[in-house]
Length: 147
Image (cartoon, rainbow, N blue to C red; front, side, top):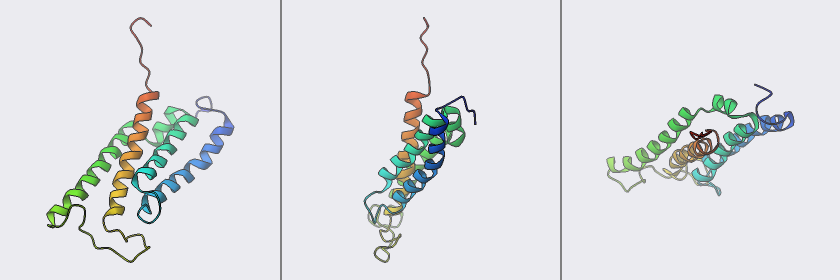
């Protein structure tokens, strides 16, 4: 990594240690959103925030090596397609909208039928969309003709 781009060594060291923990916590919030307060949206915000933190600490070039703009766009679209596919697949089985999986044992990971799968799609959509919006607002510079 280029030591001249981004922030100081102290900030980079703290972010290097904490970014993986933040990503793990975001994945936990997405995975267990039907059992605890959380779900796809707050987990996606945490996941997107981890990549924004990497971008702020190390500079945009390092953040783009971890998650490029094209990869964020693909994840954003994949999250929307996952949610849409899950939503419309209920119609294929002739059951209610978003209600085609059986409920499991209470207080286990797969207890909510289709909700954990929806949380994964929403988490991808929100996390990648938040990172993409941050990049669109900060990383690209607009130059006027007179400048």
